[in-house]
Length: 205
Image (cartoon, rainbow, N blue to C red; front, side):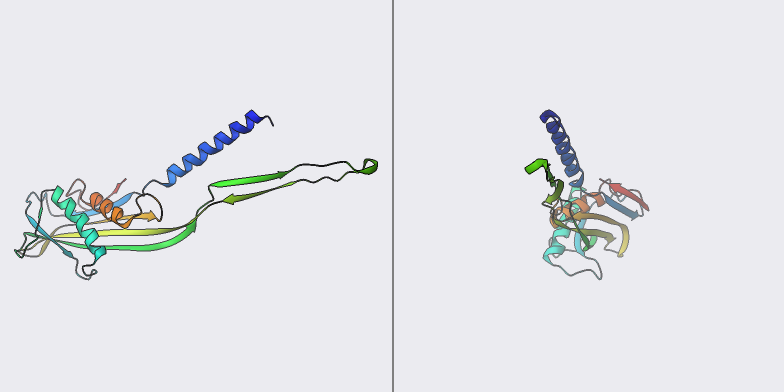
């Protein structure tokens, strides 16, 4: 085969590989479901606490609490950081669990092809042919499922005026897979277009 054709094939293969890598590095969408009793136009102080039965305050909880606090402040709420009772309580729970692992396809494959050799005494000949291909690279990736749930309760009567849940997946070693990034992304999706459509599950990309 002419060298020019070989170069064309190699370039096309590289383009396909590049396209595949781009597709696999995109973040998975976030599925969001919310329920509420109205427009919630009142914006006052809010205290962020663990939801009943959720894990107690820990560095991981604080990471999700900070992400929720950032979104609530963007919406006009003021975080209560003193002993004074706040107008609202934002009860937060989260989970992040492994859903299994998979072996990533090697990004590069090399093929070794055999040629033919002939010759020898009295016209005799020996032919050698065949080919071998093998992959270079490839990693084991862990798939994680992450969920953030928030209840916004009125402190005066402990009634829930808004609640929501956001769920997504991430792959270890891929962009956006860091737990802190996941917490921020889940909180942003959960409070986008707050309060959102009640009882409707939407997909946020």
